[in-house]
Length: 550
Ligand code: DGJ
Image (cartoon, rainbow, N blue to C red):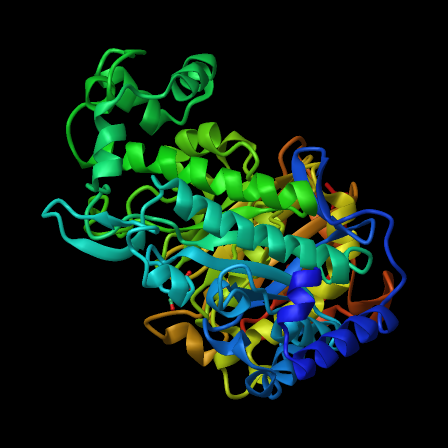
């Protein structure tokens, strides 16, 4: 600390002191516990200020969090979107411009602004790797390639990517991360504006599946580490099927080098890199948590359909088919997250929730599907939350569907988190390809259709339908809340020859957890008792009760 203060200019120091003091003064009541993950039934919750928290997030464009001036017009935009959490990078190059000299003045001001606007922050540590590359490392790292060696491709060509096989690379990143966590603890150890950390960003090897530097080759020809083999043997019955098959193909060998055990090819290169990336990242995470144990997760660039590791997608990131390697190498990472820039969200989320991995989506292209997908993932997977990428990019944020969606998800948060982990919450995502889904709640079957299937609106004739997304929460045996957009629901029973009718329905809102009725729904609004409906493009919460008749 002494060294840090000495190195700062007077003005930076004054700003820093001002900020720390202001942070302390502007703070809500300190919570007892540091943000942490907690199991409720089958669901993992994020606990913030001792209460379950749902991340209604958005990730800033990569370079936005680099000045207070640039961020100034962005804060109100984020407010208009009804975000409660901002995912924002911390750039190694900016906080450690000279080796061992840390400058947190800018970060402090940005944290102060986030807090002033009542946002929580998830900080993304743009350090050794950001989308495979090492572009965010400080210049003293970039220019000393002898001390901070890089990967080489199969032609022996060097790339601007630090090799994970170098101890000095690891230690440089780790010391900076420790300094960051120490600083966060100092300025935010009580207030907890910062609720989670994402070390590195989209780790993965490009343009070939593995590093071919001398350091890497040495490990590649050595035996597969005993620690990994031990993990695989001990967890054999619960490995993901794709990986199990790969190991089986070569006879479940437990000794030998990487190619002896897993065969020759880019798939083995990928496993090899995954292990060393995981080990590297785990050391960073452990060092950070030893100082300030916030939940820490890593994110992955998904596989372009049909592509091979290293050529069509970054090899060896925390992807579902190699999750076992990541789990073995990085037990301190709390969970692994997918970033969405391709379709098939359900396919990928199903893969990401295997082996009890909690779902959080830190990035989704900010397109016309995000509001519907926020409802779907928070409902269907009981995810920790959702976050479109480049959240600061829209000119009229208040008019975005996401703003309407987050507004009601915020109201519903106490209800959702109370019912977590008990099979009482379902999520819906429908479009022209998938127009209907059937959900079961105890004895009831809900037939949920895209509201365009009613054929009542002009848009129903369009070639492509805007997605419908909703959440349904059961609060009593026959009482439910539905929220979202674009659904028409009819009801039947599975266990008896009875007809299910709507006893009561109302539209309303939650204020401090209390339900307020805005209007009683019947007549045309329930199609004279035939269905519960929210038209596509409308975002509402409705409460309804069912009854049976013969
Ligand atoms: C995924 C990365 O994680 C983001 O930082 C960003 O680069 C987007 N891709 C694309 O803009």
